[in-house]
Amino acid sequence: MTVPASHAAPPAATAPPPTPTPAAPQAPRTLDLTLLTLAVAGVSLSAPLIAATTAPALAIAFWRNAIAVGVLSPVALWRHRTELRTMGRRATLLSLAAGLLLALHFGLWLPSLDMTSVATSTALVTTTPIWTTLILRLRGHRPPGMVWAGTGLAVAGVLILTGIDLSTDGRALEGDALALAAGAAAAVYMLLGSEVRRTASTTAYTYVCYSTTAVALLGACLVSGSALGGYDGRTWLKIAALTVAAQLLGHSLLNRVVRGLGPSTTSTAILLETPGAALVAALWLGQTPPAAAYPALGVILAGLALVILADRRRTPAVEPAA
Image (cartoon, rainbow, N blue to C red; front, side, top):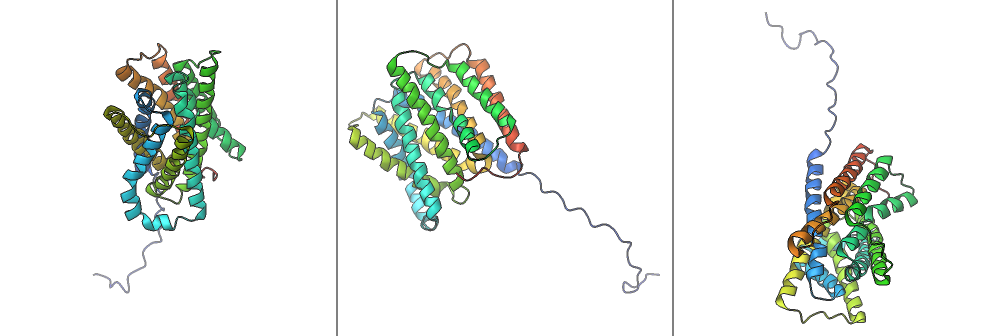
């Protein structure tokens, strides 16, 4: 006989099902790593394109930012106009500061390409992770030992690949110093961007940042007398390609992924720009990579893997505010 539900014996007490542990956000992280790969591919075209473009370095830097602002304007001013109006004083000031640091980065690095070798300049400008790690350490952040080891390995790979210019030629040494300072400026730019990206979208941040960079570089061009026009069609095509590949694809995607991957991983990945630029130069400009290129690339990849692995093992605590 079926017992009415109202008189049925209470079911035996059972333990509530365990609350499932939230799965790690592998999909977003995989997407970030994919976008990071595309970003590195984009910035790897930067040095070869700049070296092949017959225009003043500061003018090239200005136009790649100015054109990027023009491309972003319809989206930023229409779809993100409310966010731009309500970004807040702190986020706006940090975005402006990041733009000035990016202008300084370009203003230092691009001239160095005419003073020292492209390989050496690229190697020195990609010392960004060293500066990032040191700045974070000075601000009280204690990077895991694997981050230090990975950064050291990656930088060692860059040094093996290029053979840092130890020439006593004054112009080459000045170019080396400019490229090294440009790497430090890029580190601060990356840290500022990672802070703004906590609350702002990629489009809003990059629009304010690139606009600031373009204005600053325009001023530098006017002061230095760098010609802003009069180029032939091939030069404009190269500037357009540089804008799309290195600026819109490269820098913008770096700004996109730094929120999820953090400045340490993102800046370390930029080291891959050196072998990437060497490969492009070999295929396009006929510059044969050194014999140590392939083992050096392995060392760089090993260092990057250590940094990413250390980042995965860390607690969810994010980097300190920049």
